[in-house]
Length: 108
Image 1 (cartoon, rainbow, N blue to C red):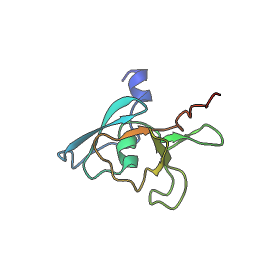
Image 2 (image 1 turned 90 degrees about the vertical axis):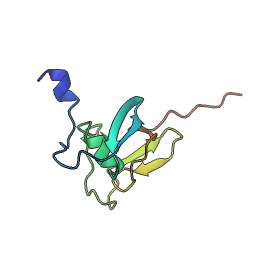
Image 3 (image 1 turned 180 degrees about the vertical axis):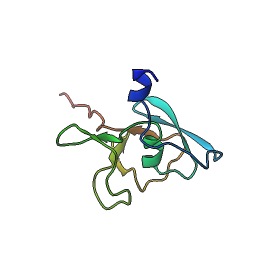
């Protein structure tokens, strides 16, 4: 396996139920695919090793409690709304960011 393949490998490996409907969504501008019934967290971790970077240390985070009790899996949609990845069902066409979106600064 090449180094690039290892760096982009998912944290989770699917071993069953791979025949569910494929749902395409955008993650940091990249077209990726999850499966119907996935949460956003599962869909991300199936294609990447982490969900986001820690707000405090920039270390990779992959979710902590996986049930909506902690604050470890917050990500954003392109409009800037935060979503909890572990409890949000994946929908086709979602446009998600693993870091806060840039907020334009108003100039007079």
